[in-house]
Length: 287
View 1: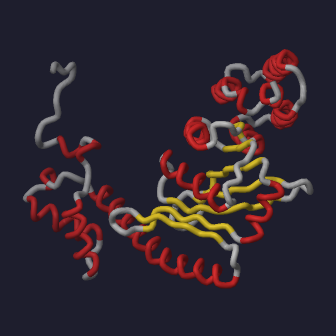
View 2 (view 1 turned 90 degrees about the horizontal axis):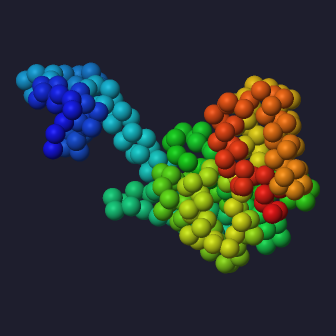
View 3 (view 1 turned 135 degrees about the vertical axis):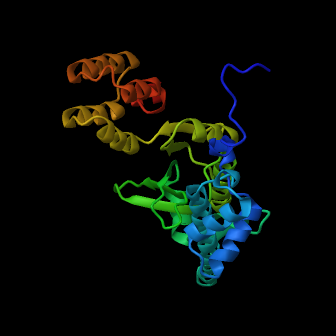
């Protein structure tokens, strides 16, 4: 195979991103040193002395710090996970309809956790025609995705149907959440699912709920609009247009007026939003 650029030398290859990795064996040594009180810079110095030269180590101090920090968060998460499971077991003792399930990986680490109380399960039987699948919550101390499954009831109050704490955002992880949720709700499936993302959740819903309508959450889009376009009048008009019950042609006319009058036709976010209009515009969703 021919290359149209110079290959990295052996002395500089460790600076290329794919090569800047702390191996499991190196992490084990670093963890042992950390346990006896060594600081990160001292641990890095140990690896440099051991390798003979800094360039022979294969990673930089930032890589070492990131690996140590990530493994530390995992240890905290798993330590707290045992307490969380104990708490859920206790909840089950006082709430017969309390539902929870979890999944551990090959290393015995907790990677997925779902729970819903009796009120949530009863509420879903009443208000579960539309499900909001919110994956935007990542403000917990573990920096892990917290999924909230909910909807707004007839009184405009938010109704929570369940929660899931995850270790990643892969398709198979979200498929696990949705399948466990359906199990928790005794097999009842929503008529429509509103999500905060397009491609990932679209595949999940297509795989597990092929007959369910998928749409993007209008409130989430409205928040995104506010952060991407600082024009209050535009954001208000866009929000109204999202829910406007009209024909497709009328929607297109209203959209053209909105874009032209507000001067946002060249905005990249607007172009992407328009491309996905069949997932959020009421005119398209109603056909």
